[in-house]
Image 1: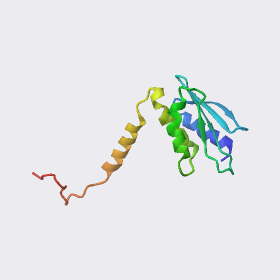
Image 2: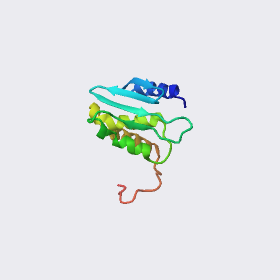
Image 3: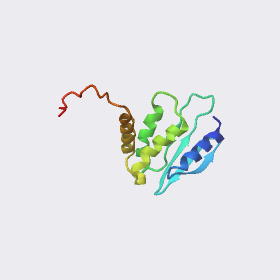
Image 4: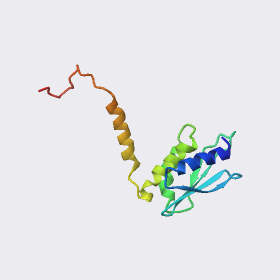
Length: 131
């Protein structure tokens, strides 16, 4: 994916988060993001033909520890998309942004998936009396 396409993905992601894409540098393949209150990070995008991964970092010592989750995710197996990386960064920064923990949302989504399955009515559950 060329850099302009990546920048378009980043702009779209920003439209539903508190972050703004404040700078892009095509030669370095770098995108800088900022959100109040002083939460900033940047992403270095891999070259098209290169096997490198995305890289996230912050020049703010307050923000840097929160990026560990995203950095671990990026270095885990498999190719990641910019969208996936940005979502993981957003989840990492939720406490700094004063937002509820994203795990609550994930649990609700999981519960919704489980509720969609119909239990078989003709098999009583173990340990549950049918009175």
